[in-house]
Image (cartoon, rainbow, N blue to C red; front, side):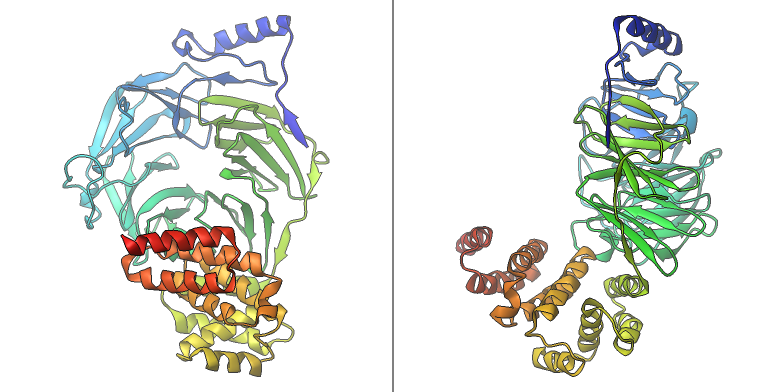
Length: 517
C-alpha cells in the first residue's frame, strides 16, 4: 500500500498558510506549505545534519540555518561552507540546543544555537593519536583528522570520528572524556545510538575488510568495544537496540537479531535511514528515492508513504500517533499512523542458530582468527541434518586451517557426503562465497570461488549467471598492486569457461589494455 500526498482546496490552503505563518515566523522565509495532510513545510536547502527528535540543519552558503523540531523560526550560524569544500561536517542536538561542527583538519567546535555563539573548541589529539593521513584538502593538520559528521548521543555526550577510533566528549565542559578504539577499526565514519548506554560505530575505507561491514558495538560507560553486529553488505545504514533484539539495516535489507534466532526482510529499497517506535513493534525506514516504509511486525504488513519527490530521506520517526520524515532537500513530512491491517503482507525470512554461528564465524575470519572460526562450526558437521551451505562453510574453514590443497579439500568434502560435482554442492559453494564477500573476506572468497570454477560444467550450469556476477564482484575488490596477479588469473579462467558473457568480455578487454600500458 502506498499513501501519496494529496492536494487541498483553496479555502484550506488559506487556513494552512495562516497556521504556518503563526508557527513559523518571518525568519522562516524559505519555508512554505506544500498542502500535504498534517504539518509540512519546505526549508529549500541541503540538509547537512538532523537529530532524533526531528531538528535539522540546512546549508546556506556562508551560514547554516538550524531548525528546531518544535517549529520555531530557524537560527542562523556563521559556519557555512560556501565553496562546498569536502570535509565539512555538522550535527545538531535534540531541540537544536547545540550544533557541533568539524572540518577535515580535525578541530571541533560546539555552538550555542540560542546565543548564536561559539561555546568551546576541542582538540581530539588530547584523546586519540594521529595515524598516517594523506592530505584531503589544503595543508596537513597537526590534529587527528575527522572523517565523518560528529554525533550527539543523548543530551550530554558528543562523538567525533577519526582514523582508528572515536573520541567521546562532554558537552557541558568541552573536555574529551575518552576514546573508543579497537585493533580492527579503520576510518570511523558514523555512529548510531543503539540505546541509552550503547553505540554502534561504522567504519569505511577503500581497503576491503570486516571493518567495512560490521558495527563495533561499544559501551559509553566503559569506552570499550564489547561486541560486533553481523556483517552487512557495504555496511549498515541504521541500527537500534532493544532489551532482547538488535535491529540493523543495509541498503537492501532489515535484520532483526535475537540471541538464538532472527528475521531478515530483504528487497531493493535503497534504505538510507532506520528507526522504530518506542516498543519496536513497528520499524520505519526511509529510502534514497523519497519513500518512507513502515513495517507492522505483529502481522507483517508494509505501508509505503510517497513524498512525491526524488530527494533521499535522511530522517524518519514514529511517535505512536504520526509518521515523520525529512528529506535531503529540507522538506518535512507528517502522516497519521495507519491502521495495522493496512498495507501489503510480507514474509520475512527466519534464520536459526546455524546462521548465527556462521555470521559469528565470518566476523572471526575477518579478524584473522581462523582457528576459533573453524572450531565454532564443528557442530555443523556433527549435527544431522545441516544445510549444505553450513556444512560447506565448516569443511572449507577446516581445510584452510589444515593448510590443505584443492585435492585434499575435495576428499574432505566427499568424506562428509558433499560431492563437489553435484549441483546442490555447487550452489552451496556460491552461497558461502557470497557471504564471504559481504564480510569482505576477499582472498578466502576468491579461493573458494576458484574451487567452484574447477567443478564440472554440469555442476556449474544451473548457477552460471550467478557465479559469473559473483566472480566479477570479487575481481572488483582485487584492485591493489599486490592483488593484480590474482585478478588477472581469475578473469582469464572465467573467460575460458564463459567466453560468451558480454560483461566478462569487457572486463577482459580492460585487463588486456592495462597490461599493454
